[in-house]
Image 1 (spheres, helix red, strand yellow):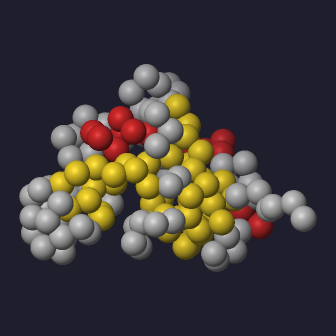
Image 2 (image 1 turned 120 degrees about the horizontal axis):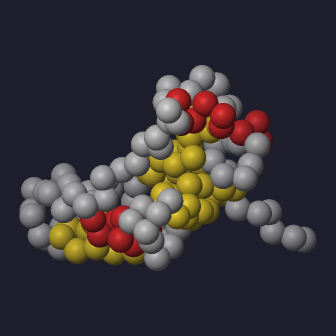
Length: 142
């Protein structure tokens, strides 16, 4: 029997707008219409003021590397052939401290350093699920 890739539940009411946006190559987060606080992951109520009133806003799919870990032993059999791989935490640009997890795409984990500029890479798994991965921004040419 082959291993099955674990995937997120994309139809959960509070999270559905986020997953719908990833299919279009966008990062959307909740914004409280009462106090203006942005939040991720999505929640039913604002963590600052408790309001249930929310809108979804797009953030730039860029940020900087906040933290990372390199996995050498796969905890799920699906990922056994992918080790070693890095999971990164990216603090989104303009996101007021919002941080997002994802796999490192197309880069050597040994080249990572705090503050490294990153950009989202959208990995389409199927017609319902598109994951957000991250890769370092190319260095500008002089």
